[in-house]
Each structure stands twice: as C-alpha cells, then as structure tokens.
Length: 202
Image 1 (cartoon, one colour):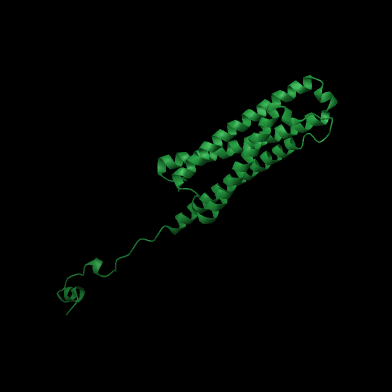
Image 2: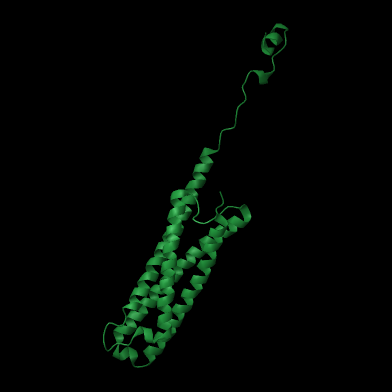
C-alpha cells in the first residue's frame, strides 16, 4: 500500500508539509525552572540567615540576663518584673527562631515546607508579628527600668549589674531588629501566596 506522500507525488501534487515532519513536542522550560528554583533557594537562605542572627542575639540576651547576679552584694535580676520579662521574651524568641531555622533547612534541602504550605506561610508571618512585638515590649520595659535604677543609687553601688543589664537589653533589641526583617520576608511570602497560590513568585 502506497503512502499518501508517494501517491501525491505520482499524481503531480505537492505533498502537504505536515506529512514530512513528525509531531514535535515543545521543549520543557528547564532553564526558567532552574532559575526560579535558584531564586527560591536564595530567598530561603536569606530567611535562614535572619533567623540565625535573631536566634544568636536573643540567646545571648537571655544568657546575659540570667548570669547578671553573680556577686553576693549585687541585686537579683529576678527581683524586677521588667528583667524577668526581658529574660522570658528573649528565651521564647530564641526557641522560636531555632524552630524556624530547622524549618528553613528542611525547605532548602527538600524544596517543600515543613507544614502544609498555607499553614506554613501564615504560621511564620503570625508568629513573627507576635514575637517581634513581645520582644519590643520586653526590651522597652527593661530600658525604662534601667533608667530608673540609674537615677537611684543602685547603679552607683552595683555598676556591673546595670552595665550587664544594658548589654542584655541591647542584644534583645538586636534580636527584635532581625526578627523584624524575617517578618518582612514572611509577609512577602503571604502576599505571594494570596496572589499566586504559591509562597514565592516563580
């Protein structure tokens, strides 16, 4: 049995072009996908860096506050509500940042979120907001207390206590700053998810 091309040639007709070429499938957009995945990995690495710095500042702040009553004649930090608030807030943020670091490593290595995506983006953004305000409130209360102590005789007789309190509070503000940066990025992920249905604009 003759093919349609041979029969058309013998009849003096021009064969149809679509008979000469097999069906071609479009090439998959591998380059675009690779670039998008690289951008997503860099974005997640930036979030991880902010989480790590926030963890370091908050952990250092809680340690400085915890060890602030070594001398027998020095005041006890746990006798002041504001200093207890500073310690508790920074310890909570350090634990939260540690968890978020684990979640970031999971997402970078596996390309998927630890929780379902919609839960993860809202969990990150909501907790970033809550803990950032918690840290800001605690460090502001600690700053106000230090000013009161410096106005009294406490810092005159126990200068080291006030200096270490200042250091702990300053480290807490550092943790708040980088937690705020993390909150901006997690907010960007929420906006992308609302608009595109994905946590990153690919």
